[in-house]
Image (cartoon, rainbow, N blue to C red):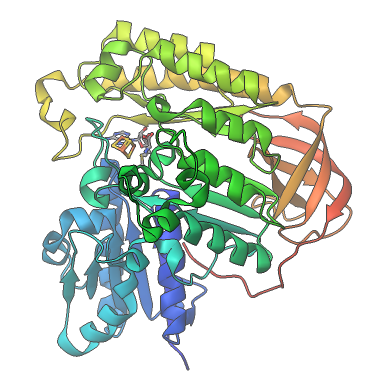
Length: 486
Ligand code: SAM
Ligand code: SF4
């Protein structure tokens, strides 16, 4: 019988996508998905290190796996992802029962390293950077997609910014864009495979292509340089600055079969009119902008090195709302950045109220060693004060989220079905174009990927409720056995 694997994923969509790729590699090596940890022969923990509790969680899970491995010594344990890239040898020092530790730049080596560990014993292999494009991008190799109708597409890896709180640049490396033509070809392949929804992934999608176009600024760019950057930009005499993200939105949203294009995240400092225009003119691009604010205080934003002020942020938001019909806006906010005063936080509450978000991910600042802010120990904010601010922020965010959702009662939404609701299998769940979760009653079982019209009848701060009106399109993909990842 073939060996079985189970992948647990922590953190962001990039990690989820890396996990799909690891699943693809393991399946190419003959493994099949396990239904639970008890029937897994290989357990992969794909880690995150953005906040401290992720570290604690990993070492907690590894402790639990030790007991399992004591019972079943043949169990193989792999730790990958950002925390592995950061902690390196420390993981096997703290957890000697881990067989393979691999970083963010050598995900493609998962199956090979496991095979080597079976012969040579525990291995830690961390690369400083990817050796070539094919290995660098999780989307460049076959992956085992978690859902058949939707796919992640990594357009860029790494980050060239230096936000004072953030560890991403040190664990994901410098910014590298995937060649334009390759991305469009990838989306065409996905569409041919029945995918109707894609999410373009990058830490700062609006700087997509900065590295690709640099070569084209020379007097005699080579045909290869032109192909890497895409013809739309290469033949444009205006040579717009950092132009490629808008071109990419145009190109992928006109691929036959692609109904929804999402992306995350644009950095507010780099969000340009071209991107807003491309969102406005392409019906397939979802009317949803995730624009991380982080703080509403100009003083804190400057200390974070975010490169914008609250007013500039709100002006960009207003421009986006004016240009894009029925735009939903979401954000990320950090509470308790070192030195944040009551006054700074009051500004955050004001900006959050003014921005009228549809939802927000709110985080308590977590010092990450090696980042600039982590050294500001004497300015750390009292945890009790942070907890109280966090709660006040939650209330302001929920108030605007609920108002936004209640305003949709009575509307008809186009919903892509995810499947039965987790809480009640008689209820179906799906997502609207604005990426809102909708729970609705249907008189029949709807397969994931079905497109339906739903009449909205109720709302909470985190979801809509409704009734099925009609099915408008059946899933385009062939039915496959679902993958258990995570
Ligand atoms: N590249 C995106 C951007 O610039 O907005 C953010 C990527 S990061 C993976 C996701 C979110 O985690 C950030 O927007 C920030 O709010 C949060 N985050 C990052 N580092 C953090 C830290 N040290 N403590 C708390 N939250 C943090
Ligand atoms: Fe981190 Fe800033 Fe880069 Fe986002 S833009 S990944 S917050 S350094």
